[in-house]
Length: 123
Ligand SMILES: [Zn+2]
Ligand SMILES: [Zn+2]
Image (cartoon, rainbow, N blue to C red):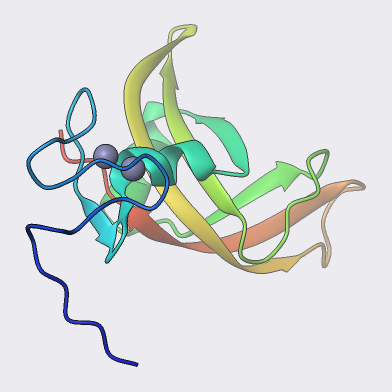
């Protein structure tokens, strides 16, 4: 069924925010009925990422991560990549979805996963 939504009644299924009553700090629509803050909160994993890599992901140059698989990464998992610099989070976040995963030729316990960005940072 095709849904034609009306901006006046559009509502986030998770937090109930609306077009006229956004989340604290602001949010925007990711899907017909899910806002960006909720997508962030729904993430399965939070990972630190250095500024140089964060920049490359943001520019679309880097679409994979090599990580120790101590978190049971799976295809379809949502991951927040949080920029981490000089021992603290900068507050910038990229939310991505894992689309491919392999441990081929990796060190023991390590995996490579490919992802697509679903929530680009807008700062
Ligand atoms: Zn929401
Ligand atoms: Zn919201």
